[in-house]
Image (cartoon, rainbow, N blue to C red; front, side, top):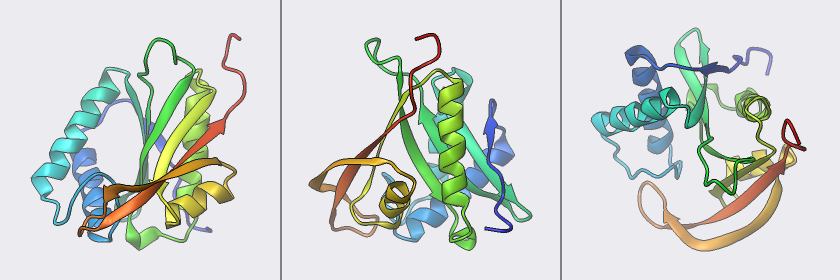
Length: 179
């Protein structure tokens, strides 16, 4: 963890950042991460996904955090801030991705802590996420104190095929600002 890059929030996302984010996504899918995409993931599909995310960031519907090291973008996480009107206190944490070249250096934990801070800054008091049951991400979330709610068997396909279960987690961040 000595050389772990610090995540920062992006309020706009440029073409170079989209390209770097696409490379992180491509690497994660190629490495077997179940993050909504099947392998092989086409570069153009990854870029299109991040362009959609960038549009959501600019509309204020999402918060996007990015970590970069000397080789470029290496980790990211999103908060989906736009929720139904009866859930303004909540955000979904999504697409926590760490490039394989920087794993096991504390970046996942740093991204999660930064996302929790951004959520608080945005007035959110409850975060929700899901992860492959028993996977590396699930173990990280549990180490960080996220509360396991339950698992759904056969929820999604792994990138190379085959069903996997997903486990849902939540994190209570305390009372929202102004409560």
